[in-house]
Amino acid sequence: METTARLEAQRAEVEADAARRNVGNQPVYALIYKDERIIGYIEQSGQWIMDDPSVNVFDIAQSTGFQNPQKMSDWIEKNMSGITVKKFSAGEKSANRDSSKLHG
Image (cartoon, rainbow, N blue to C red; front, side, top):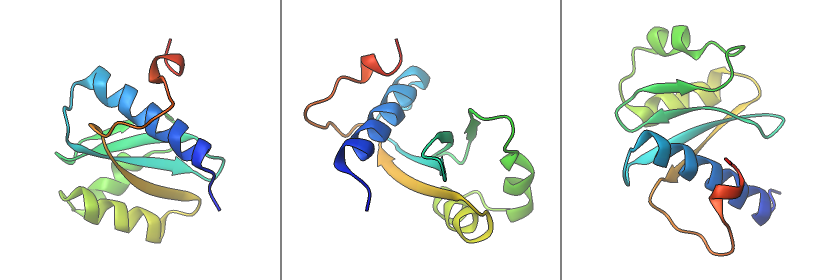
């Protein structure tokens, strides 16, 4: 069971990254590796942003042929071992956190 603190930390990281890229209130799909690292994102536009160059999802995205981020997310969870996808609303606000502490 995932702890609230871990989820809040991941949400804060997603929001801080989304703010830097100025995606507004669009949903962002975070790709989370089995060790809890966020390794990349799929924006609502279908654009990929990968923070971990060791995971090459660009080829995978092309092979799926999906432009819809939800379909991409579903395919990743089904076919890529160790990666889960969580959808966050970049505009969501959560109590008791300061995202500036995560990305100084």
